Image (cartoon, rainbow, N blue to C red):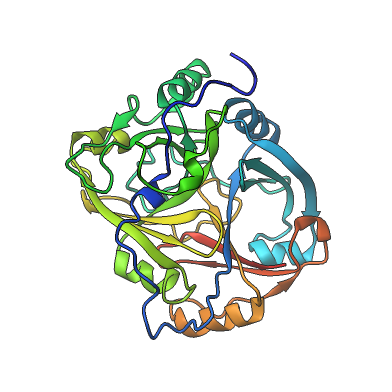
Length: 347
């Protein structure tokens, strides 16, 4: 098999967030955001233990391409990340049109992902990678001995009008971060995933986060950040249980988008309700900590909006960034209602 894992195009597919986008809805009228705070979703930043190991995994196993490799430190980085003495190596990796950032803390290391972490714990977050041949993708991942969450690819039943026919598989990277690959039947979702390609791994459709209360999360992501709902479904059954490795799993799934970038998917476990909350003492150097990267035109206005609308949190402080190699000029870090990290950036 070649380095690029070439093959003739198999099924024309789309990604889960868009495939669920059958119930279209704009942002709620009367939102505090007149012009959306979120101009785009810029991907995610993932804290890793060993950068070279992670680069090798994402490039060799998942075919990401390294775009940049920078080191940063100083008071502005400490303020942005909330870690005293933070020195970080940040590597930007790209797959298709989407990017992720891998972040290694070079000095003070944080805690590992708990060995007993489950898919319904509220610190759960993953990226969903679109593939155009699930059998080839699974064979490739199995050949590289990835840690499996699902026993194998699962096909969601046709009785679910929004998700029927989707094939999905959960696995983990070397740090225990959750990942997903997806294949969808023709006729559902974004047309860009249906373009012929000789690559199996195509791009990132969405990042998914577990939430305790969808309505509460919508007040943050939709009403405050200005994302719009593009779809939703309720998933259960043995296939969903095997996919998530959660017996009795029944999920409410809500998908949101900004004008650009991957979607954000809210996963509320209606059953079971025993998922553990996000540890309140989590810091940015802990490996469970991801940051969803949100691009905004005006960091100060975004901080003001969050300070007014998110009563549980003080107004975030905007940090000027002098290092141009990081790709943004001003930014701040905050948390959503469940504790998931969100970093807003202005370029």
